[in-house]
Amino acid sequence: MKTYLFITDTDFKDRKLTGAHKRYLELLRGVSKNNKIILVSSEIPQIKDLANIIFYEIKKSKLKLPSHVCGMIELCSVLRKIKSKIRYDYAISFSASNTICYWACGFNNITTLLREDIIEYQKVLKVSSLRLKYFVFQEHLAVIASKKIIVQCKNDKNNLIVRNKKYCKDIKNKVFLQINNVNASWIKSEYREQHNTDNRIKILFVGEFSDDRKGHSILIPAVAKLMEEMENFILYVAGDGVQLEKYKNNFAEYHGIVFLGRVNNLQEYYSMCDFEVVPSLIDSCPNTVLEGLNAGIAVYGSNRGGIPDLLLEEKYLFEPNVDSLYLFLKDIIKNKRYRNDAINQIKRKKELSFNWCDKIQNIIEN
Image 1 (tube, rainbow, N blue to C red):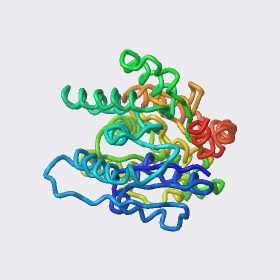
Image 2 (image 1 turned 45 degrees about the vertical axis):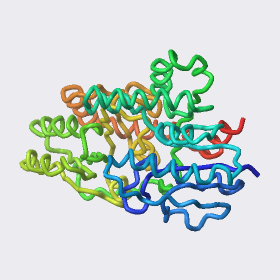
Image 3 (image 1 turned 180 degrees about the horizontal axis):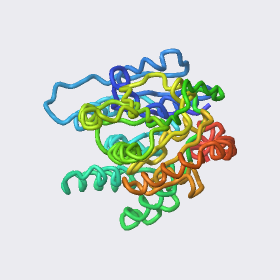
Image 4 (image 1 turned 180 degrees about the vertical axis):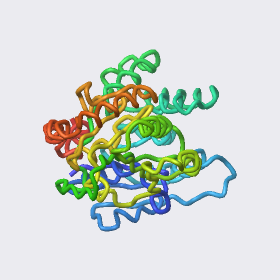
């Protein structure tokens, strides 16, 4: 039995869980079955039932600093206090900032699971050059501090190596690629039972409206343009965020675009819809693709990030701009391509069905 050290400055109690947070919990559960875990975090209600965990709680500080800076300070405070008290085999991090906390406090044998290409994400969001340099610097430090780095797609691996080979000569030996699985514990495994109530083709989009990264700024105008020509389809838009009201107001005249807001249980819409569109401007390994494949509907995505690693074939991919997506959707709807594509993608679903936790542990330990 090994001992794994996990840390996180994420608040799992009050915030919405992203794909990275769900993977964190997935790995905690998987590792805890046969190993001991030392966990440094604030309260995580989702794992109260787990055994083999020693918990050290992070106390929230009252410093008037940016939240991510406060998180690092709080984390380092606990790590310094417990360093002489604990023994561990592997130190696990899910972000560059957490890896830096380990390093600053003298911990070693660090495996960093980078769940996104933070530099490319920031570029898409068009952040200031100063902010971008800050994230680049963080990444350099995390790469140097890590014994192993696990990424989700070829794009992330190549970008990470290119950006850091000057600072870390052995980076190619440090970086491992492990794609995500379609049978994660939170993804329902029921086969699709379609229950369309009318003859219109139904399309699904799932994504946050916090910023433009998920591609709604491309999809919704493309769909609106297509609705000027044909009316035999409907788009369900699941997700919330600060931009949602703007889109609801700007496209209110298009009654075939249905804004659902935040949906806690998407199974109803996966079973109702004919295909899903994932138009992300950048995305390392989106759960929406995995959930769509698992539901048995056709999934189409932008030719960016790790989406090509998941869908593989070019006929399922499009360039992320309004005109390309408009023509792509027009062809799918006109020729009802989604029927055969859903059948053909069953093979990919089977290929992406495996024990993800076991594969991650194998990389860490071997």
